[in-house]
Image (cartoon, rainbow, N blue to C red; front, side):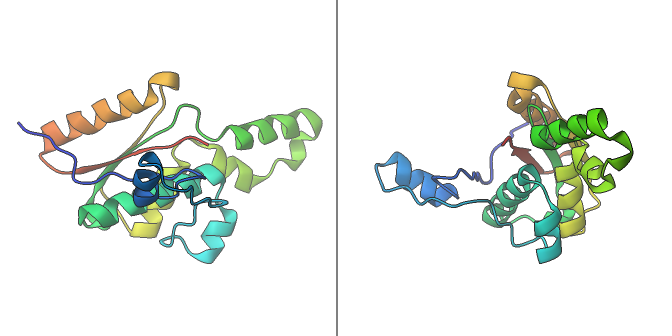
Length: 164
């Protein structure tokens, strides 16, 4: 069985997209951006979403657009070393100071599959999705998960690696 990459995407503050990254690697000037801005999320969702969800959605959107696949039919693997540490830290602080004031929205964003959930809702995707975390080996674990899915199901898989 042959497995290949249809498209690649990335987002970094100094290179907010694949073309910007390629230009920067070739010695071009940085093209700074303050934060990811995925167009597939509504304005309300972009306001509510955490930085890690925005990052994952932005990269996923770029990759799918470049690949030509239909986002609503694409299985996915989302992988992150730690999930959303700022949200987890804020929740732990809130639990220590005033546990009854813990925000349900913050809790909603703290789950490791929040990014894949936002993606599925935004793209109306009902295909299988997996959220993987393996500390410094997270990208490798996500890649292995995506390769196994491709080999077993004979279908394309979106792999999204993200960390803030």
